[in-house]
Image 1 (tube, one colour):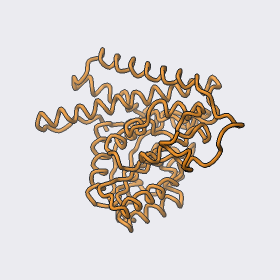
Image 2 (image 1 turned 60 degrees about the vertical axis):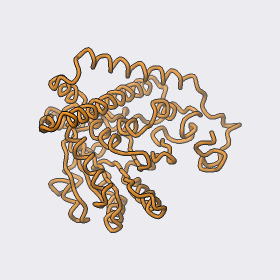
Image 3 (image 1 turned 30 degrees about the vertical axis):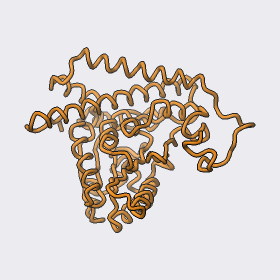
Image 4 (image 1 turned 135 degrees about the horizontal axis):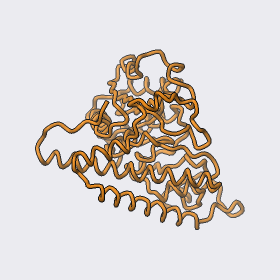
Length: 342
């Protein structure tokens, strides 16, 4: 598929879509630069643990984040930096967790990808293997019981997670209870190094939606316009009371599973196919072709993003980790340590 232009519509709506697109692109750009900085720090031995990049998945991720509102629930995964930023995570929160700062949301206690602020609806990841779907279901149940209407929960996962029991049980629960869940699946062709041909026999994972009587949507994950329309539309439908929505995006992970993995198992033909397009470059080309921003403006946005990332990382590198002798090792949910009492 090629990048699609928006259909003819009133000037005000065109301007609104343009602003949404450009805002999403800029978040994608910051996410890419931040990921690249983390990769550099990892290679320099400054980050302990894994580093997992969202390169190639930013368009899908950001589309979820920008469509959510305050009061919604978001469960992003290891490749969802763009969506995290769109939902309100700061560069400092991301850097503090990766670098183990005691000032981060996890206080330097947890693995460097398990970060979030539950009080703000941003759930720390337990596992990327479907475990977060039921957690989002639980949060949506709680909102329903409190009479907090009009809320949506988005859970992200990869196609590998759709082979787990947690995925099927949680999707079935959401369907039976008609929860406003949007399940966003990044079908990036490999579950670590296992190709999709060894994972599922259906033509598309969207085919599974019918088995649970939920709405299914397919989208080209390399196309920001399409992601904004399809993911945003699915979130709107869930918010309007139409029950769970399953969105499946086809794309290619443009890096290894983590920085420890050279991705030598990825088929070269797949890299050269439309699936292998870089969504960030596609977006940039579309912006220039649409004359929404000149090359000089795009360059200034990149320079600004680099400066923000470098300044934030420099700040965090001056911060200490938790002192094992003086740290209060109670659970972070306890009264004296919970968010708002830092």
